[in-house]
Image (tube, rainbow, N blue to C red; front, top):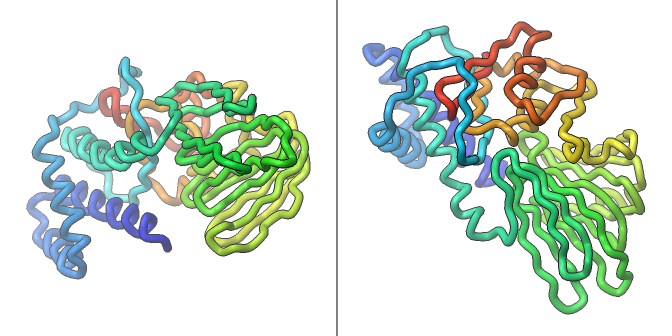
Length: 323
């Protein structure tokens, strides 16, 4: 587990302890367990103190199921929390508002690194200096560096479709977390937000070479049209698909084919203002098949959960809870 993964896991655990204690403030046994968790590691205690400070600064949000969307877009990470006994209290809106502020904090440094970025529900086409086209999905950020005999783009967040101008002398490189994609001229999609720790490269035209630059090993010497590489926790898997579906998001769609609910939710969250909280791990592991409309993300979330008896609940305009 990377240090970033560890920090994210610790943050989620702190948020879970905080939510549970807000629901049962008089539960001495629960509070003792939380204190034991904090005492086990100073980083745990620091994460919990941060949750408390944000809570003190946050206004309570009353629950609502109205579809009220904010005027300004924000980034929307998905936080998966363990299942707890059902308690429908007004504290939940405020507590999750605090979680939202904590979860969005890393995006501030991301904005400093990015040359181009998109907000929630926004897509953008960027033409680079050599004429190569980058089509950026919602909630995506890239950094560009052209120097000497290299053309480098770093995908910092989200996903993007690249249509690269051919140049055999200056290969085009896309680095996305552990992956580095190398091409001279082709069209392909790279996604670093398909799910927790998952990365994908899908080719529409031409071919690409994919390496794990951290481990200095090749994953695919030649990924051809209609081939897709999925990389997760050091393991690479290549499958096939219809090339026309390389970047379905460009047509306003999420296409799921026996896909885990958690992964589809992660894709839809890019178009959903605020924080999306998946409360049930078992529900997240269920699988769905279908085509979902990115232009109506809340309706799409309901369609994803409906076959498995899940519900979508809105707490103000900034928080959506999936049960």
